[in-house]
Image 1 (tube, one colour):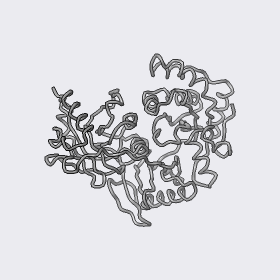
Image 2 (cartoon, one colour):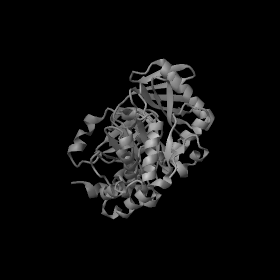
Image 3 (cartoon, rainbow, N blue to C red):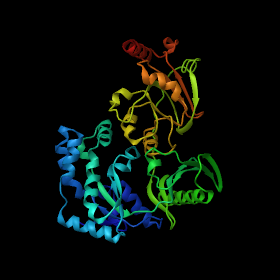
Image 4 (cartoon, rainbow, N blue to C red):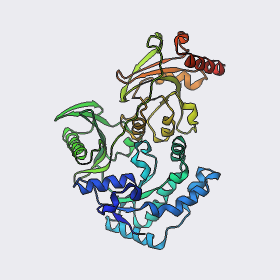
Length: 411
């Protein structure tokens, strides 16, 4: 098995090296500031992923162990050790799947940092085995695809000393920059709020947080414009190290559109609804029952169908629920994270940083049902705990469905 350099033209094919590596190879070909890298092609994972698929009937954990247990060939072990040495002795090992050409797979697979020569083989096998974690398996199920669709390449790049990092997004002639001091992993996984800014030309509008100086925000905005001009991509991940600004990921966001149930504005939400204001992260309106999952819960996606998912922070583990959800609300966390990218690609209207924790406390303790409505234009979430009195004015099919569900779940 021959490792492919990001500078090799063969590395621009997502089916060969995955979506992440292919976009970075294209960016390097345009002279963009992408670090050098070497890719273990998709084909190298075939035996490991086949072992995982064969063990899936015994559960996700068994499948992961089976995939992890397939040893690397001596030739690949030797090539990986040489690759780490060539890249400086300390690398980040990043999953890169052909599936990731679709942003709904954002954050699905593992990456490992600070990997040395002695550990690189284990790190590569760990990336492969991450294909059988609960999250990607549930995403596959929601897309009605079998485990044979799981294909993974692995990208090795020098480990950066991150001074700052984050994302940038080109949206309707406005550049949105989000970032944190230090490594951006916590921001992308929803653990850290970070700093948000809008850039209009050379003018910066600081939206939330602090910690990124104006020069850095403008430099990220220039990089986003350059990527957009060269590749047509509208979303990037970036890292600033002591040497300069680096492009670490790039893709084109294809935003979906989720239809809004036809319900009279005068009755949904009702006049007595409590209202809370957050930040619109994905445009659109949504209405439905409130569902409050927890990160440690395995919530059937069917339970989220047509509902508004309300979570504390945008952790990637919630992604499978978004394929069926009507809307998403976070009580805290960043406006741009991997989960928000999934929501945007699926057209799920999303509000972030909505101060509704107190109102939702009773819902956490009881079986009482709560309904909600999202208006991302105003950033408003409306909540109420009784079905609309005017339900009789709704379209007949919807009215009967709502009443039936209400009677069946009332204590």
